[in-house]
Each structure stands twice: as C-alpha cells, then as structure tokens.
Image 1 (cartoon, rainbow, N blue to C red):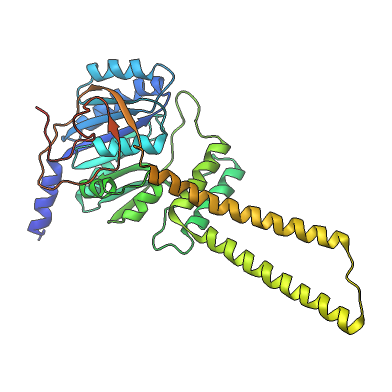
Image 2 (image 1 turned 180 degrees about the vertical axis):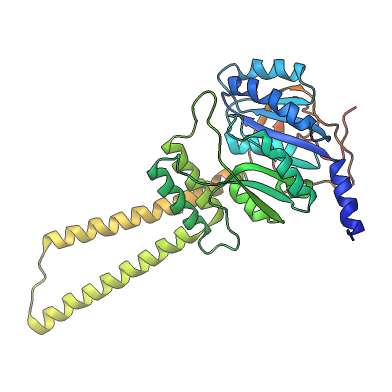
Length: 357
C-alpha cells in the first residue's frame, strides 16, 4: 500500500513549478532552434514553467534574438549581462533568479537534449533532490583531453570528503532546497561542478551522450580549460600546498645529507670540495623549487584577493520577458552576490519574500 506522505509529495511535485536556466554566449542561432523545442517539451510536463536565458555578454546577435523570442514565447525571461562574466557567473545568475520548485540547468548549444527532462522530473517526483546527466563515454574527445580530465578529477577528489563526478556536467535538475542552499554560498570563485557536489543531497545519475552542436564552435580552448582546472583545484582542495611542503621538506633533508657527506669526506678522507657545476645545478634546482612553491601559493593568495574585494559575481544591465511570479516566502535566504541595474532599488535576484507590484 503506498505511503500517504509519499503520495502527497508526488502530487505536490506534479502540480509544482519548473524553471529552466540556460547560460548563453554567442548562441543566437542555437537559441532560435532550442527555445521553441524547449517550450513544447515543458508544456507537455503539465507544470507551470519559465525559461531563464542568461546572455553572458554575447558579441553576436544573441541580444536581438532573445528580445524577439521573449515576446513570441510565453514564459521566456532574457537576462543580459553588462559584459562577459563567464559561464559560472551566468549559471549563478540563473539559479538566483529561478523561482521554480525544480530548476533545470542546460546548455544553449543543443547538446543537452530537452527529451531528458521528463526522465529527470520522474526521478525528482520519486524523491531525488538532484538528478544529473552523466556522459556514457568520451570517445568523441581527443586523447589528450581525456587524459587531462581523468587526472584533474583524480587530483581534485583526492582526500576530499565528497566526490565530484568525473563525467557529469552542468546538465541537471535540482530541487528548490538545493537551489536555496547554493544561493547561500558566498564565494566569488564559482566552480559550479564542485559546488553541486559539496552541497550534497540525494542524487541520481542518468546516462546520456551529448548531441552534436548544431551551430557555432565551443568557446573552451586548451588555455581556458587549464584556467578552469586551476580554479577548481584551488577552490576545493589544498593538497597542492601540502605537496609543496613535502617537496620542500624532502629537498631540505637531501641537502642536509649531502652537506653532511661533504663535511665528513673532507675530515675523514681529506677530499676537497669540488664541482662548480654541481653547485650551479643545485642553485638552479632549489631556485626552481622555490619559484614553483611561490607560484602554487600565489594561486591561492590570488583567490583570497578576489574574495576579499567582494565585487558582484555578475551585473545585469537589461531584461526582456517574464517568467514565473515571484513567491512570498517566510525565510529570507542570503544571495550569492549579483548586481541588477534593472531594479536598482532592490537586490537581484529578489529575495523570496519580496514581490514586485
């Protein structure tokens, strides 16, 4: 016999609301295809819904495309940044502005299929609080990228109390309580894959394989991926600092043993200290170790520098369209830190207990 509380929860979720967050940078052509498809898929869910597209300072005609689509398609809210702040900031803004009981994050390049949304919703109704899509394989990637991905996730997960799924991306559904938890995280260095994992909650992984990009090219090159990996490492693990400490300790022990050998050999066998080349090699070796150590510490100090300035994660310059009505709630949750020039008298995203008239 079904549990009454479970049945009540399922029916409540079936009648709930759904937000779909899409970060976009130079994706005008893809958005023109994606939004009508997504509209039809969301309509089939039977839930009240909204689509929030965050234009991350695009340089193509994404602004004009979104302005037009937000008028043509009910429930589309276009949010435009004052400049390019990055995908992590765009996702943060979308999460901040989403008002659905469930929030789905997906890319604008049509590689995340809207057909997976019903599967995610089903798992959510069955009790999952996070449903994320995980790649079934990486055979379509270059071998060097595959190796780099494996090394990165092994490094960032080493010794951690939680694990970041290696083959999971941003394509996921989150319950409202997860969204509110993420909004309470104040850091400016937003490595979202790590924040999702750090928050925890009941998770379900579903396999998928990204579709072929319909238009345009990926904006992530090798340099950007390297920066992204460094951001993730410094945001969620301190073991590089410990490695530097161990290297320094080992170098000191080796130097002490070698120095002791030189002194003993002089007094016992009368060997004169020789080897100008040895001296130069040792100086260069230890200088390199020192520079490497300073570089590792500098990366962490740079993150501290970014955090203490407390600049907003993003700045919203303009909006088009409208999404779900803002709900009045009893609890005010802190926001992750964004600025909105559209409603300068109120913080944006609006706190859940504020309603615009």
